[in-house]
Length: 274
Image (cartoon, rainbow, N blue to C red; front, side, top):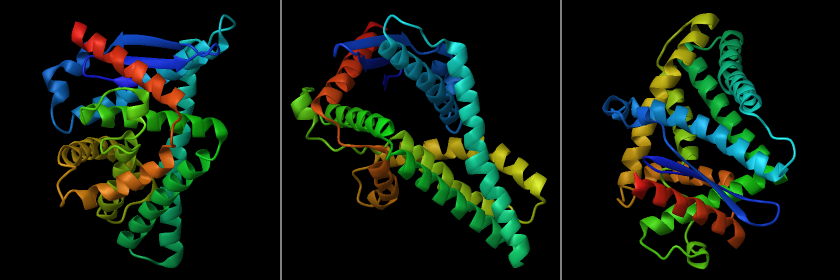
């Protein structure tokens, strides 16, 4: 999937080995001036990514099914809702409850309890990504993720967008969504640690309410570090995010790169038409 400023293109390798492309314009709301404000735009990008991701999964699944039964949008919406609920339970509620319990049982101060909560959350996120990445189907998704990054890296370097040339570029990218996720978690460790003592209910509510703020700040951080990624003093800040992408990307084959290129070219054509 390739997302521009006005359009998004999804390319899929069909069972007959052809590449099927779906191009759609982005909602006009995301191009409004107020939606591009710093610390606000990150929330729109996050929401848009969830919606586009759901649409991409639906399109891909339906292409693989061929002319048979199709997956409707209601089923995918339900899947998204359940997935978000599970993610909140695993990465938000569980670390918060565990941190509060350990803080109480060990007699620690709220600062140390909050810090422990954040470290549990960080370990859970990394362990989860490492685990699912070992599943064959998820591994293929991560390889396509690597193909997307290679394509963008080649484009930004001004190289010829041919599969053999694109394959020589790195599969890490400074503005990756994985970097965004890791940054949100790391920022949460710092921010939540400063909140002080709270009861469990208020503790959970505070974490939930602060997620949008953390997302907005993390997005601006990713934009800033990505813009100056070649600066020597920025590179240490990028190192953890790039290291995380070793878990969320795999080296793609040429066929995967061809799919990424098809999506990118289709997105470019639609962007130019608008």
